[in-house]
Length: 79
Image (cartoon, rainbow, N blue to C red):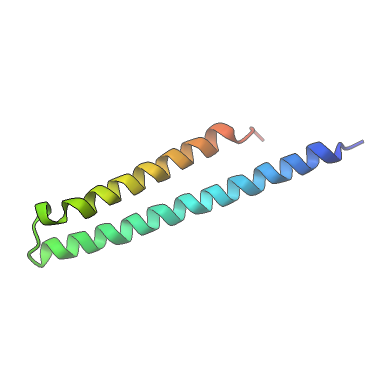
């Protein structure tokens, strides 16, 4: 006989993992778009020093996405 509480928990963990994976993709996508804009700005004559604050934010976004991905992997039960 199935345990409804365990079944509900399993479904919720899967839903959370899916949402967290989607968030990771979103964060990485935003970071990639900003990096593309940085590259275009540099190609247009901006200096790396001028864009350093923006570059730092891209680095922070990527670190955040990496931390989220790691947390999902570490907290998702094996199939």
